[in-house]
Picture 1: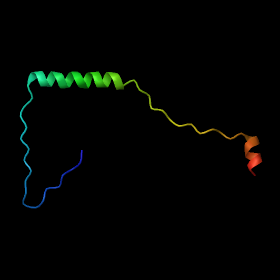
Picture 2: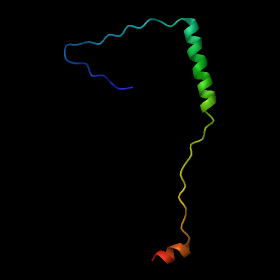
Picture 3: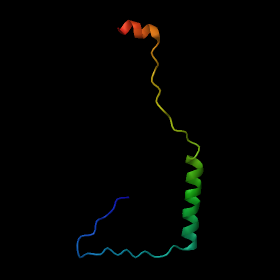
Picture 4: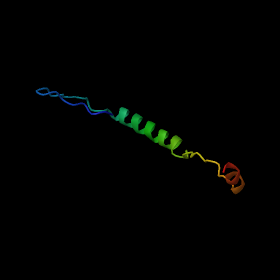
Length: 60
């Protein structure tokens, strides 16, 4: 999320209503299932092939 710079003399006021218990549980359940689904993914790293000494000698 980006930061919004307030212009001189202007105040941004955000009034949001409180969440109901039903909304809180729905959000919590979504976060719980998202974490369970995505937590066991492993980060794939790229592997570069190693040069053997024969390949190094041929390049020279």
